[in-house]
Structure formats: structure tokens, C-alpha cells
Image 1 (cartoon, one colour):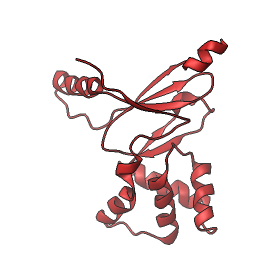
Image 2 (cartoon, rainbow, N blue to C red):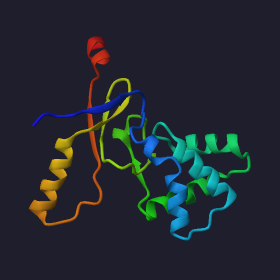
Image 3 (cartoon, rainbow, N blue to C red):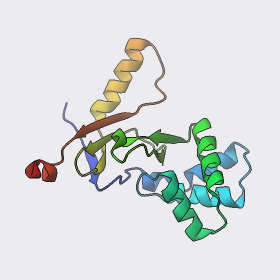
Image 4 (tube, one colour):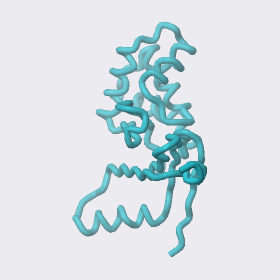
Length: 162
């Protein structure tokens, strides 16, 4: 079977942004969780993100919208979203130290492919990846609900510089 890759090339650029706009706010409302002004701004930032964001980036973008957003609210909102399974926490091979990045669940699982030299992160989708998850579900008689895969190596540009 042929692989049908779909990937973007840029630092942490996200594949699923078009399908997720407003998704977090909607999911929080559906769960009956109160949406404070600060929380709404943070969710707006995360819903609109076109790349993986760390806490500092979320705070910076949120404060552009509302200067009253507090760091503690960002952390609490992230914990709330993780608790409800609405976002993933990624370390992206610790390319930028111990920073953690966050992304909302899109309609498709994907693999994060990172260059170990320049730090560029790409997202990769494939039918083969979906088939692998189905095989795991069959072989282990389980329902797969979380799938995180990271692959590290050297991009074409960095290979030329080695």
C-alpha cells in the first residue's frame, strides 16, 4: 500500500488548525465548565495557534488580547484541558530544553518529525500510521485513545551542513 503523506515544513506548524478553530471553547461549554474572561482568551489563543505553543507563548499571545491574563490562569487552564483530554502535552524530543508544548486534538493523529540540529518540527500523517494503531488495538484487544509518536533526525538542509 502506498503512503499518502501530508506534512508542513516550519517550526512546529500544525496540520489540523482549520478543523479545530473554536473547538476548545465549544468543548468546555459542552462540559458545563465556566468560561471566565481570562479562560476564554486563553482558549481563543490555543484554538487559533498555527504552531505548538509553550506556556510563555500562550501567555504572551493572550496578553495581546487582554493584558489582565495571569500566568497562573494559563497553567490552570492547561491542566483543566489536559484533565478533560482536550489537549496534548508534548516535549518535542526536548529540542528546546525542558519546555513543553501544547496542541489541541485534531481530527487526525499525526507523528511529530523533528530535526535534531535546527529544531524544525513537522507533522506527518499516513494511512499506515492509522493501520498500525488498528493492529495494536486488535493485537492487544484494546481501544486506542492516545497516540503520540516523535521521530528525530536531520532535515535535508542540515544534512548538507554536517
